[in-house]
Image 1 (cartoon, one colour):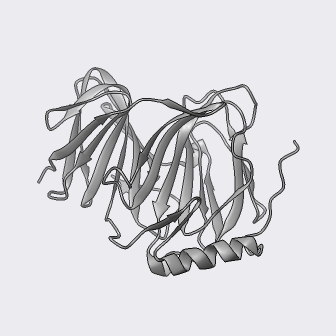
Image 2 (tube, rainbow, N blue to C red):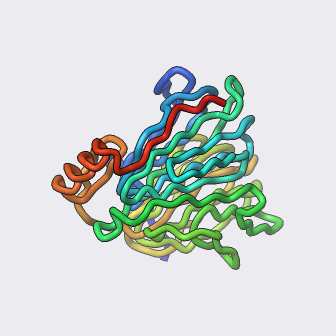
Length: 276
């Protein structure tokens, strides 16, 4: 049964910091959990510097149209280049320092930073890094669409990495006047990037978010005269308490206090500023 749209939000880029503008969708405001943060960004210089994360997984996906690449570093020893079309996942778990920034300052990068929630039992799993080049991301291609499988599966393709929280995240290019159908879990959303289309009578264009109800197991998207490009995310909400503490996400305040203490005492490793 097809899902119904319960919310349509037309969003826009806002300047967050010098050198960075973004469209941020948060689970505090929209029903996207187990995704917690879903941000489309445009960045042309380093912004944040080395910083910690714990209790979640953080995915950075560089869109194929990005002019530049990202450098990703962490206190586990990873040093990766996220090229246009590639992605990197930091399973922060018990805690890790990481750092991401444009490889070439002044050259705009375009991508997504996405936080994925962990269940309480998985808050403190060992941290690790997962990386996929553009060529390693599976694609399903027909005459009518191309679907890049960033996590989970679609059709006969499955992403090469697995998070502790099961989600499906797809990057879709749909040809003009064609329709595509996706099997979904109880939570599902679509975020428009380029072109125009519709779903259940609701229009989709760039930076448009559609949230769907929990009833049904299918989402249908139809492209307009110029085709469309969009992201689709789906998963099962964890429905556990969430305590936010800046870059940390926990289930209880006691866990948060313990996590902050572990960070203060240096248990999440260290990472110096990048000197090139």
